Amino acid sequence: MIERAIEKILFASRWLLAPFFIALALSLLVLLLKMGHAFYEFALHAWSGTESDTILGILGLIDLTLTGSLIVIVIFSGYENFVSRIEAADHADWPEWMAKIDFTGLKLKLLSSIVAISAIQLLRGFMDVKNTTDRELWWYVVIHLVFVASGLVLALTDRLSEHQPGQSA
Image (tube, rainbow, N blue to C red; front, top):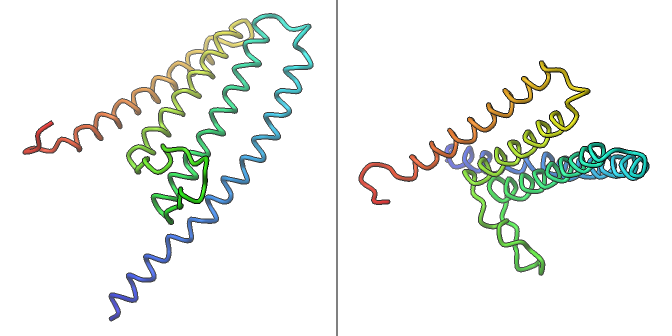
């Protein structure tokens, strides 16, 4: 009887995660404000800027968009994996992928997004090489390679754990 009560409390504790997901949803509003500001600055200097400035501005917008997409992935798949199932039938435009991402898929998507964001930061550094020190570029490359290596190791360990001994591929 005590064990059953403890299990009920532990199971109900998953709802303590809901405010975290709500905070992430609200952070999208902050990111939208940042996107609006970045676009305003980008558009304001579009005619006077160089080709490099234009590409850097676009890369900044892409970076913010990827970050927003990453937040959405974490909100929906995290909520469905750890808190409660969302009824897709109630939403006509529900993306198919949302119901199919498990925790392993979430980790891989998260790390893939971080690698993409890191690659954009690295590209921005190379595009603005005249204003970036060699030391900064070196750190951008090292950090990016660490993210890439982490992603590869995570994917490899997940792949190996799927094919345990005695299972056919």
